[in-house]
Image (cartoon, rainbow, N blue to C red; front, top):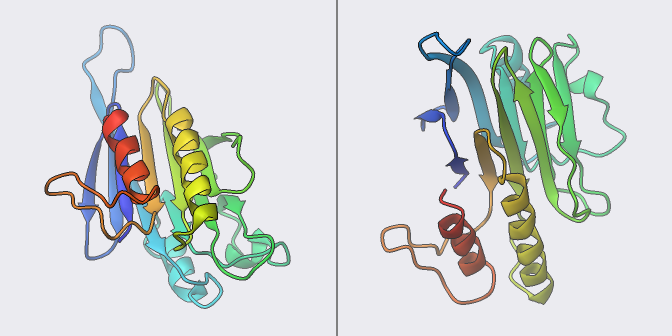
Length: 212
């Protein structure tokens, strides 16, 4: 199940049936003005191949007119240009394509009418993208993550790196939203517990320690 974590300010309105997300960010235009809200329509979905679901993806851009679209399991590679995904050229794309095997990947598509800046990622072996999006007097960060469904020693090491990176990326003074698919089905949210196996418990600890 896709995860949506928020840190610092703002609010989320989530339509579970459609995957649509409304980000509500409080903004004050100047020191005297009363705070107002800026709303952005966003979509998060697990594609399991953007090419196989290209019609749905383009309908989300051109029909539903989302401001930000966050995708996990894009299954893209360097041979697939952004112009194929968005033939009208309305969106900027930030992609992390899996380099060796088929599958995985993360992507964020942002309307070109919004000002954005790619956030650098320290770890090179994660399927993760991060971007800061700017308004007139505010900004917010979106981090999109896909964690492959493995639970071996390599996966445990990767989970530690992933959690360190997400902790670093969320340590900012503006709202940060972490979304994606972490493949942690055995976390019990009712009592905040997880198996002691070095992956799901590490992810749960990240959530608790960073006040998500």
